[in-house]
Image (cartoon, rainbow, N blue to C red; front, top):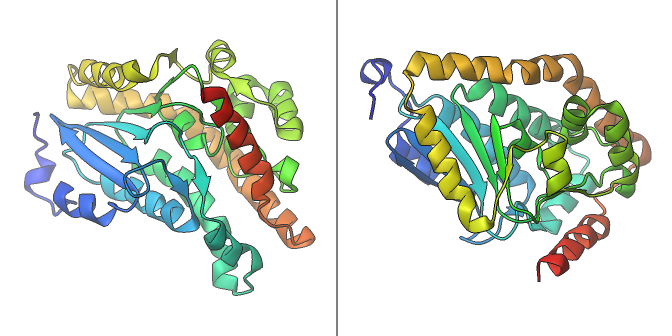
Length: 284
């Protein structure tokens, strides 16, 4: 593996340390500079909670600060991108009055997105194994996104009484245009994998067993070029995201949180999990 001169002179994060630090939500492996992150809960499908959300925002900065990481592959544990929610953990935020807990509800979605884009300065590849829908933003923000034929995009925020402001619909506005994004924001209809491919939301649609091998193939091809070329190309790739997030993300996420404060609305997991349940039935 190509060694960075910086890694020999600066105190930087070590793989063995942050593998343990983020083991609760990420299974991490690295080979020849390519680091693969697999989101999980107890080794199985990833269960979404405020805690793992916070761990991810910290992980982006730590992993991005290790110069031994040259290309990143982000995936999740089959058969879903995110398959369940920690109801009790979200209930604490929904019903809490502590300003610090309330503020964390704004901080987490804001910094988890910003840290992925500003904290990771290497090429990134996302692999979505199966249905996606919930919090597809991390996958879409990666430089290259691969998905299975079962992948769907759906933003349930408006349907459950929230402003769709946590970046998912903002990314759709940037990728598929304001009219198509508006339809998704108001009606929450599924955008299937083939449509996502045609609209430029994902790059390739492949069977599940082909996804990770293809991601590693792409990563190894990227690694054929010198380090400065890889890094500078990534900077060009993420420049549109940086511009979009700088211009609009603060107003999006603040609007969502202001709406929550005005209406005292809570996470309606029946709405979200009804959609996930329908996706599971399609897969069966």
